[in-house]
Length: 362
Ligand SMILES: *Cc1c(COP(=O)(O)O)cnc(C)c1O
Image: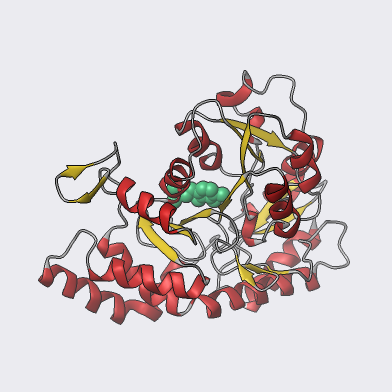
């Protein structure tokens, strides 16, 4: 049996540090915004090369609060991709804004800069690219468009912790960014967690207020806020993982490159990697005309396999009416041919060979 991710192997490596940290936290009883959240915020800000990192309750909240803090609200249009997890668009809807879905680059599956430019109207206020599957979106182009049209750039980094482009980390490029620490993400907690990053002092101050009931000073409330803090226990778990994140991402790249090498002669499309950025392979995603047959064969051998994402957002029931008539040909084609193979820092070369042999047999 080969799972999509092997969290048990990772835990074995950090068990001592985690258990010690959790025991200390329980002894100290500093459960809300305690010393580990503060330390983790400093450590992530330093790692990402960004002025502020603020721990929140989830990746979805991180995007939601980032949009509020950047002043995106009712009736504003936010240009984004339909080839993503639903939370990208949910965050936009939470603030009353309108997600405007545009098509993707067929090679990277990330939002296509030329499609962004075509979708800009007088109501457009922001662009929200997703660094999908751990590969940075084309930020040089996107940044330039946002500057030219005076739009907020809010990065969805929920799959891209540690990825970089042109020497900059994802999450350090836009006005603000949201990260997720959902357990299966590249940097994952043992429950939910998230992070907002920004270089703006003003945005950072707003996020700190918003995550804590709209309050800077306890029992004095300036705005309607939320209960959305990164949990202290989760910060304890994330800190030893953060220390090892480069090693984990490097191991993911090794797995990905081995897959691509072993499948180079097969009639399917392996992930495209440009030389601008560092892909951290949150997922290893392939396109094939024989997807169904491959999924069946893998299943028979107890090898996990998943489709991210089978239905693009503009075709989801929740957006069907709002997006009636919208056609995104590349997105639609990719979502009907894509499948993702097991990948994690602890996947052995022999397992990769076994998986490829099954695909080859099909
Ligand atoms: C996981 C994910 C989110 C949401 O993160 P949660 O922590 O689960 O709320 C948002 N966007 C993308 C692209 C994701 O993969």
